[in-house]
Image (tube, rainbow, N blue to C red):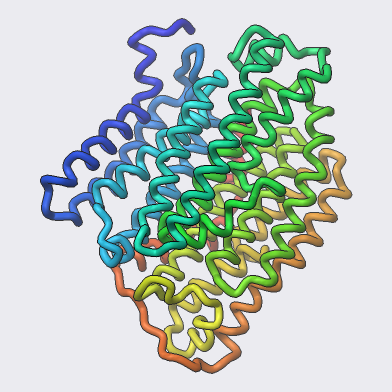
Length: 469
C-alpha cells in the first residue's frame, strides 16, 4: 500500500506515545503534583494498548501493524505497565523527576514498537536507536550511585558499537539486493546464499545479539542491570530483550528466510554458549540484580532456540515465553524493590534469609517467581519451557532441546538457593519493607499471571500461534 496521510492511523499508537512522553517531560517543570505523572503513565499505557488493538491489519510500505507486532507490543506495554507500578516508591526515594522518568520509558517503548512492526531495515534501525538512547539515560538516572554511571557508560559504548555493526549490515545488504524492504530482500536472496550475504547476516547477528544479551555480546548486562535503578532494570530486562527478539524475528525469519540453513547453523553455537554461560555464571552470584542479569542471559539462550528452529510453532512458543518472562521477571524485581529501603540494601541474597518468618506474603511472591524462572510446574515458566523445547524437538533439533534442559538444571540452583534462605533459615538481621500500594498491585498481578498462565495456557498459545507471520 503506498504511503498517504491516511496511513498515519497505522502508527497512531506510536504518535500517541511520543506526544504523551513529550508532554510529561515538558510538564515536569511546571506541575508540582508529581504523583499525577504516575497516573498519566498508567492510563497512557492502557490507551496505547487499546490503540494498538484498533490498528491491527493496517500497513503501508515500511510498516505493518500485523498480529505479530500486536502480540509483541502487548509484551512491551505489559512490561511498561508493571514497571510503572513498581516505580513510585523507588523514584520518590531517589528524587527522580517523575515526568522525565516516565517520559523516557514511553520513548523507549515507542522505539520498541517500531522494531516490532517495521518492514524496512531503516525503520527497525531508527526504532532501535530511539529505544537504546532512552534506556542509556534511564540507566544513568541513579547517578548518585557510581555503579549507575558505570553501567550506563558501558552500555552506551558497547551499544554504539553494536549500532555500527547494524549500519554496516544494512549497507551491505542494500548493496547486495538494492533494497532495504524486508520482503524485497527475501525475494532477492532466494537461491543466493553467497559469502557477502553471510557477512551481512553476521553483522546483524552481532548487533541484535547485543540487544538480547547473547554470549559473547553480553558483557554489558551485569554492570548495567546492577547499576540501573531497579525498576529500570526490571523494564529493560524484559522489554528491551523482547524488542531485540521482535527485530530478529522480522529480519531473520522474513528477510533472511531463504538463507535459513546458513544462519541457523551459525546461530546454534551462540545459543548453546548463551544458555550455559548464563546458567553457570548465575550460580556464583550473591547480588540478586547480577544474578537476575545472568539469568536473563540464560533465558535469551532458550528463546534463541525458537528462532533457530524457524517454524511457526517454535516462533509462537518463543513469543509466548517472552510474555511469561515479563510476569515472572518483573515480579522478581518487584520483590527486590520492596526490600530496598535505601540504595544498595536488599540486593544481597543473604538479606532474604528468614524472610518467610518475618514477611510471609513477600516471601510467597518471591517463591512463585523463582519457581517459574526455574520451570517448576504448575507455574507459567514450566509451560513456557515445555512448549518451547517441544517445538524445538518437532523441528528436528532434539540435541539442542536436551542441552537446554541441562542448562535449566544448572540454572535451578541459584533460584532454589534463595528459596532455601527464605524458608529454611532463621533471620539474622532486621528486614524492613518499602511500603507502596502500587507495588503490591504489581506483585499481585505478576503472581496471578504466572499462576493463571501456568494453569490455563491454551488461549495465549493460540493467540501466539495466530500472530506468527
